[in-house]
Image 1 (spheres, rainbow, N blue to C red):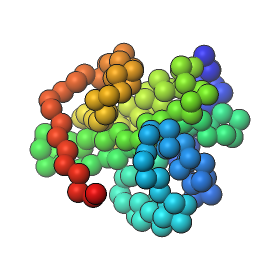
Image 2: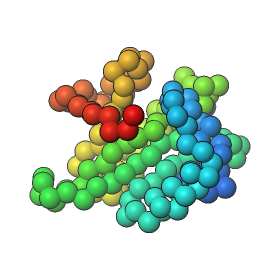
Image 3: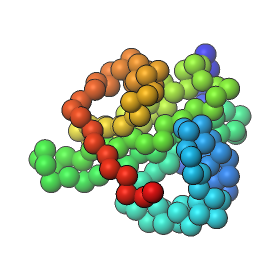
Image 4: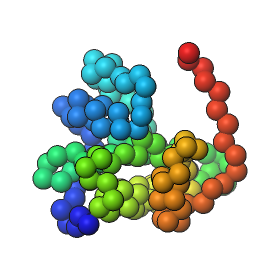
Amino acid sequence: MVSAVELNIQPLYKRELAVYVQLLSELGEENPISLEEAETLFEKISNYPFYHIYTIKQHDEIIGSFTLIVIDNFAHGGLKFGVLENVVVHPDMQRMGIGKFMMQQALHIAKKNGCYKLILASNKQRKNAHAFYESLGFQQHGISYVTELVE
């Protein structure tokens, strides 16, 4: 287990994009984004009201990351909700408590920003990830649908 004292949570910096894009490949991405595209997208995302990519570092090295998007909402009395995406831990660092630390941080940030719920989606093939999320109190809720818009 890695001690939470050894871990730092920070926003992703533009200079770290190459490492970040490489880490995302662990999610099984078939068409990884180029560094040039990532730099352009990073600038665009930085203008969104609350779209934050967080990195988890140990000894100044990125070992995990998650994206948290806080969305304003007309329903539920105007309460916001959070969307958690791209949750990934470096393969050499998995099963050491880093994922749990990241999820606790995501939940804390979402609560602090007035979210009434935090949602995430996971590929139905990722049974280990589902068990992990459930161990943290997440529940399978409803049915999710997707239609691919890009071939």
